[in-house]
Length: 135
Ligand SMILES: [Zn+2]
Image (cartoon, rainbow, N blue to C red; front, side, top):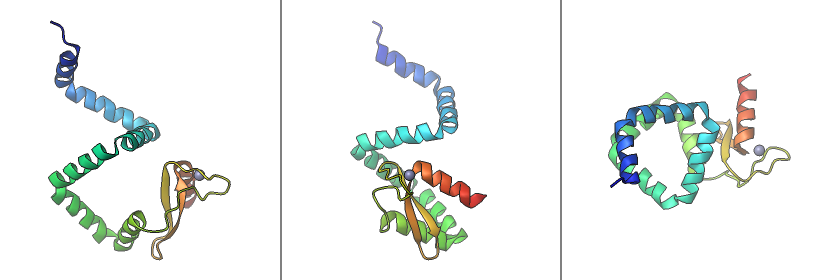
């Protein structure tokens, strides 16, 4: 008997590398879309996402901690500020860019790492802000 589910599984197994490569390529070419997609998925599957993250951390604890340590050694001020901002204060629930007030996909944009000062921006205005700083 033809079983569609089994067939899809088998197809995936046989073409795993090709499929993974293709989706990776798509993600790189469509970063915004891919981010939106994963964000939407995370919002819908909050518990599942937390479990995946927990499991991932448990499995890769040493690598994750090692990477964090390297990052910390490279730039302790930046590292601390980023983590502090992420876990604690200064986060608003809307974009602070003039006339924007977007409430989705917010990022914390640092204006001063040492003082840990910054503003909350939506994805669009965070990009604009970073471009302005780079030029
Ligand atoms: Zn905005």
